[in-house]
Image (tube, rainbow, N blue to C red):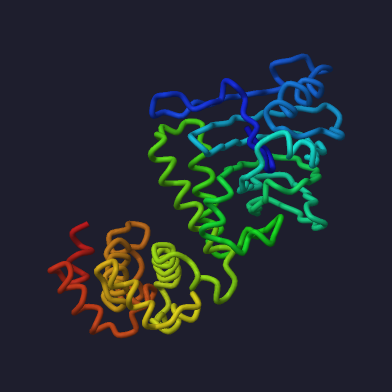
Length: 329
């Protein structure tokens, strides 16, 4: 399986022939307290993670739940504090051609890779190169998605230069990355292998968007550019100054390319923005928690700066005036 960047697989964690990936769970609660550390070090860490434990806190406890689906590996684990390491020998003896997406949920992880140190606190995200040896001290809860290196390289070739890329909790697209990693690690999930393929593909696209520097987005495949374009527009839909030039500048592409991408999805920039703002307003008008808000406030909140235009566009879209729409809820 994996933790912090390895895909050594436990024999009972292999994906079954059915469309439902299999879950494997290990916990120190299964053994006596005095044997917990040795159990985790020998039965779990060495065989499942393919890494070494240097030291652990007193009263050590830990658990991990893992899933394997085709070339992908996912795990969620929690532990008291302990130190781990993966040497060049361990990398050579096990699969390493992968990239790990690491989500810190609670506690803290301090990671040293390629001469760089990164500290991860709750909701921070790490993108780790599995070909790099490392040392780390970790505690708390974390979730991990391990993807084939080639899959990441195709979308974000700039990450080849970075053994560890940290995305802080407030980074662009971080919320979306967290949602994908948690969905892929949900223990009560009924996701099929096919659904996991789609989710991991989307996760990989978002990783590329989140790690791209200014100007690098223009090097992404057109479908990833489209996803980046729509994500940025959704995140800024409430801003009246949202414009084609603003989006093109943010993504590092030309206006011509931006309009071409919208044509690929059968839309124009203006039509897409208008339809999505109207949909947001229609939902807000029927939201009981927003009953006290004036209709004009809702319109302005979603980027409209001309109330007359809003009323006309809303009636054309829903065949009702905004007030009539609200009163029908």
